Image 1 (cartoon, rainbow, N blue to C red):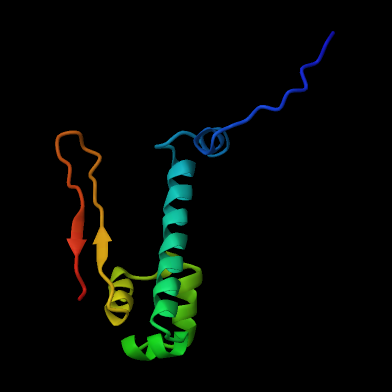
Image 2 (spheres, rainbow, N blue to C red; image 1 turned 90 degrees about the vertical axis):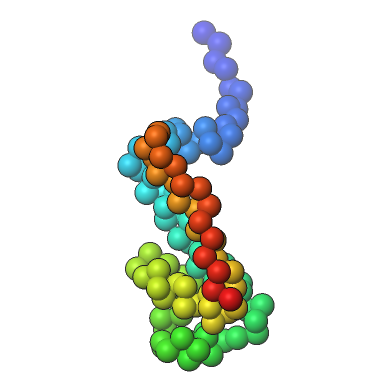
Length: 116
């Protein structure tokens, strides 16, 4: 019996489907949600650094401690939208939210909030 030792190559989407489940499953949705929050924290950190602000300085601008800015940048999961908007206002950044209702009869696409 001959064995096939070829390596199977997967796309990123195929690997996510295989290990996390298809789009729409709870595990996959949770992964995608957490990934977006991680990216949000990274965007805040990058914007802060581009403005040459320390975490302490940014915290002072919005009235929170340096430790809260650090938590937001490293794990934005337990942060209110109001706090995130305050951060972006202090950074003089434009914020866009995309909202899409999954009901087939009604869709809302690309709502823009400007904090300038």
